[in-house]
Length: 252
Image 1 (cartoon, rainbow, N blue to C red):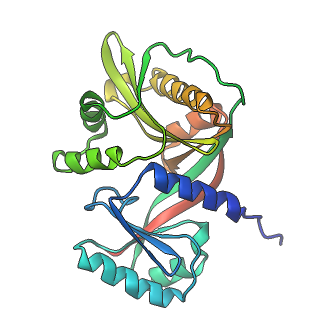
Image 2 (tube, rainbow, N blue to C red):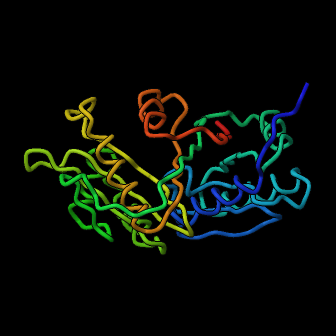
């Protein structure tokens, strides 16, 4: 049986870009793992992530558990193919449950920049108060996490686009794109419940991809929860294909 080819260089480049695009407030490097801290807001920004593991996982497990306990948070592992098979098995044996299976998808973009055709999408270089409040409401961000969320957005150091789709003078969809070294990442695409299944997400994503082309991006990437079938179908229509997946391990 032929072993599927895994492009670790591609995975590593996408992982690094995603870490830059959604920065943690604090981080530490331990044995080839990146430990991220952001006051407990989102698993992505409060988890241990493999980069290039250099020590036995039994040692890493102990370090990670002590690290997050010291900061008053549960130990969460985000396992991409860069982690290898051992951590997943060891964490399963240690009672960590598997959650949040997520696909990482990419698409090629035209090399020439285009003027945006989505005239109903407003794009800003920083998160305004209106964008942050509207996104938080549409995405159900708890009020107690609003300040943490805003600080994380303000910490993005790469060129960013905060997009709002306006329909009948009312904001109905929000999204974020971050450009870095020829690639644009899409994050937090959210449509207000009353505006779903009417093409709003397609128009918003298209505008963000056009913005990415204007930043000289030739490819795009995104992360989507594996059971979000409508979103996956949309992204496939826009030319995205799955490259790899990751999931979380967290102790109950």
